[in-house]
Image 1 (tube, rainbow, N blue to C red):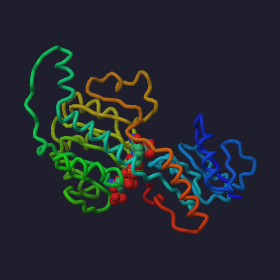
Image 2: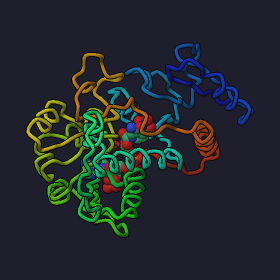
Image 3: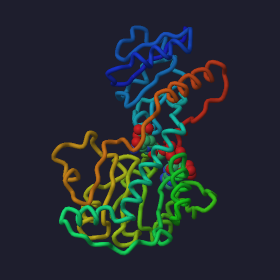
Image 4: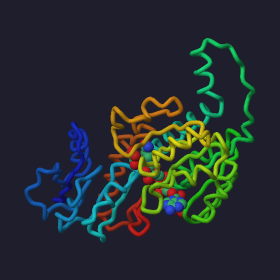
Length: 310
Ligand code: NDP
Ligand code: OXD
């Protein structure tokens, strides 16, 4: 028997357990904290596990993140360093993320906020149509999600500049890499999209200095992690006009506390971490594939690099 532990606070894990048992005949599935023989656990499926938990399972051979991000696992100081972590990469998750960003970019570009105000004032006032070819979009992170939305924005006619850790070559996209090229990448951009993983190098990257690289009146879209953003720097940049608005899907604290200033800020759009979600069928398939590869001694896919932190 192969023993799997699910460490995930969810009201209904039954469908996942049923499907796992249907697909893999010789497994036991446990739900944290009900696990009486920790030495039997070989794989953990998790989202936001409690700190210290992974060190309790001496036979652990695989950790599966239920999402694309893995900082929720890597932040554990007692994490055993030799256990591979795989993350979910799937086409629906990618295309839904791109949809969210396209919507936010187009709403900004086509003066959505301005027309909302004009409607409220019952004022019929056509504004000059902006030039798409003059609206540079800067995308931080050119991985699975960043490169998809970069291509889609480019198809719509936006000049796209992307930034990654290592150099990239993507048709139609101006690619920049490394800390020293961040300023160059963002100079003249009207929209900044953050699609970086949260690591010690990227935490707080959406700050006053980074905003100062952008054109005056630019727009911020943060769909990565709340900890990328220095919140007070955003509020100051909105007050000074360096930024004209922001669309935020992720926050330092989720759910966003009731009294948080972002809720009622007229230039900020808040959504509850829904830019995209994992499709449950595909997610199940990814879990089954990962466990099957592990057991067959085949290479795992979408494995996290501990050294780089993503
Ligand atoms: P990937 O790992 O595929 O891509 C990460 C990208 O960031 C890569 O291009 C990488 O560079 C770049 N990068 C990492 N560190 C640095 C650095 N220090 N400097 C410059 N570039 C860096 O991740 P995904 O595209 O799959 O996902 C990105 C993030 O999106 C996730 O980590 C998660 O936090 C967030 N997310 C948010 C969701 C939501 O609903 N809001 C849903 C899903 C994910 P290189 O290519 O050189 O390695
Ligand atoms: C993820 C997320 O990382 O939902 O998948 O944020």
